[in-house]
Image (tube, rainbow, N blue to C red; front, side, top):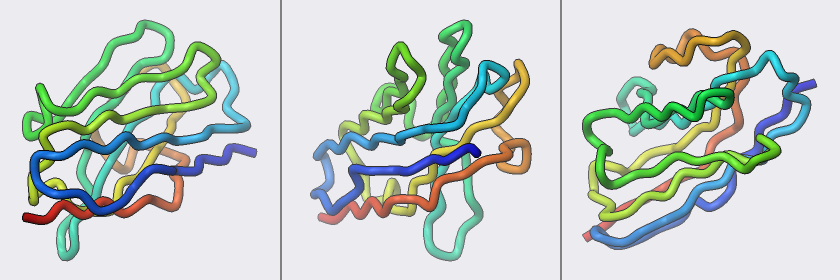
Length: 124
């Protein structure tokens, strides 16, 4: 049974940093893609960053490029998102997600397993 649990959310001032973690269990070798998504109040869930476990390729939304870094431990048990230079518009609930297969799409609907999310609030 796949289980994803996010940690590390909180409140931070604009310009600050946070590091999110996602503890993963139950993932088999067929799960090659994991990602971080976020949802702001009143908005649809959107992709933030993804990583292909086998090839190490990373993908970022334009809005976070140069500020966020996605990474994964060698055992693929933990997914991270280092968030620097946070902006007010980064506020939202951040979700960890995983999907089987070799592709690593940005589409929310393509991910089969989700964590419950962790809240990130950026203020002035």
